Length: 124
Image 1: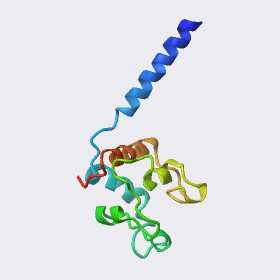
Image 2: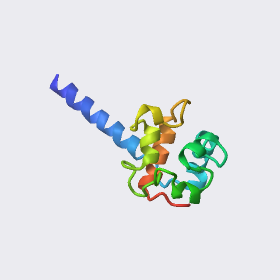
Image 3: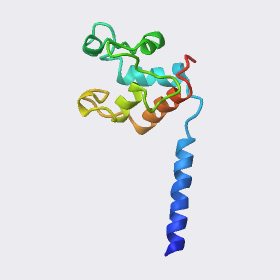
Image 4: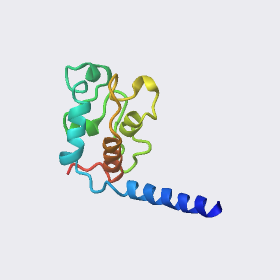
């Protein structure tokens, strides 16, 4: 029985490592902008309810990096404490999970945003 447990643990570790390595070199213009346009900019653009409430505009890189009324949304290089990642991963209070009132982002989109921030949140 011990052998099965060890091989199972090894297999899970291997799957976790492959998953963690599956997304690399994320581009703002090719990857992140599309996620934000599809899921965030409907509300977080000037004149929209999310913008009025938070001051956050997700329609372009400069405005995204500027943040909103509650401070910066993205901490380049630090996906763990970056508000963007906390909000879309569901690590913030449920009342402010994003996208608000909609389905959660796919795990692939969440991972893409996480890697982009971890890689320095570059305007590439």
